[in-house]
Image 1 (cartoon, rainbow, N blue to C red):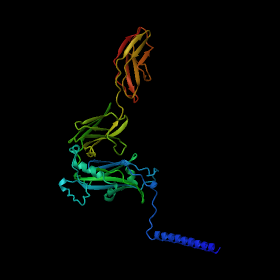
Image 2: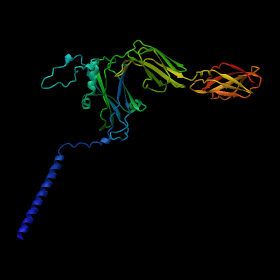
Image 3: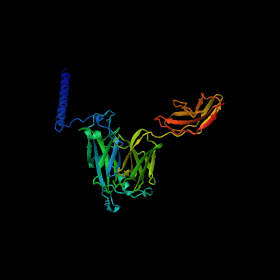
Amino acid sequence: MDGIVTRSRLLMNKVRDFTWLLGLAALLIVAASGCGKKEPPRPPASRIPAPIDDLTLQQRGTDLLMSLTYPTTTIGGLALAEIESVELWELTRPLPTSQAEEPAETEEEAPPSIFFAAPTDEEEEEDPNQRYLDQLLQMDPREFASQAQRRLALAGENLEAAVVGDRLEIRLPLEPPQPRGDEARIYGVRTVLGRRLISPFSNLEGIIPIPPPPPPQALEVTAEPGGVQLVWEAEERGTGFRIYRREARAREYGAPVQVAPPETDRYLDRGARLDNRYIYTVTTVAEVEPLVESAIAVEQEVNYLDRFAPPTPDNLVALPETGRVRLLWEPSGAVDLAGYLLYRRGPRDEVELLTPEPTIGLEFLDQDAVTDETYVYYVIAIDHTGNRSEHSREVEVRVP
């Protein structure tokens, strides 16, 4: 019995010792956690704005134009709260002038800079500067984030002014005013919702700004029945021209309505809609990818009103029948045709309108014709604005 009691006491002592060690370990952990600087809690990833993935970049004159979808969602797919700002970041790199400037690599380490690789057969025709730009665009986003400089932050009224539809349009003047074509520029944007709610950088876009070509001059815009006719003169023709159209109340031009080849100096805009006021301009294109075009120098406004008469109906035929005349004709072909007006001139040269309301068919039966009388008929097309065509050729018929 004494042995059993002794063993129980030993077991209880061991349990107390183990409990004491656990408590000591917990105190050490708490003490260690309180020694360092306590970091503020990180915001949930679902509240961080999603990165932009459709940034585009072009040069127009001595300005860089950037376009991107207005940020509306978080990384977690939730709707964004009110945006604080959208930041534009820039990284510039001088263009290498030749491979002779490349420092020799040692066996110990290679230089971290980007240099030209020997061109393959497929790359013989490729611009080395463009290859260098393409290499820069493949840099790690963390490298861009560590080296880029913030150029501007759109916020408040400036952010609202940059909104065009569902997109943000950013205009950045080049510095110096005339680009020299001797450096590459890489751009990325990010959305700021708060101090710790900043999106990752967008897709990177780059360009080598060059002196822009002179813009076309002497632009003339004329409204015609088939569309709006543009005619221009150009000192330089580059790789072609871009024709832009915007409604008079719009602030910015969208995508061009046409990209014309360099040998042309005119364009008929058949997509213009009647009864609209438009503003047109034409730019000269120097480079296509990335796009480099001239500045907008000349704009012309046109009030494209429907003042155009429909085409005249052709081949009017009068078929005499007993006590009546059947009239047939071919269609006018007007897009906004309202119908046709039929006229009859009687024996005493009196002219009568047989259709007070325009008829939309291509056949009409004159049942008021008098037997043994001779009549002259003609037809006119009319559109929804009230414009009338010339009258068709006249046909004469005697009623049996």
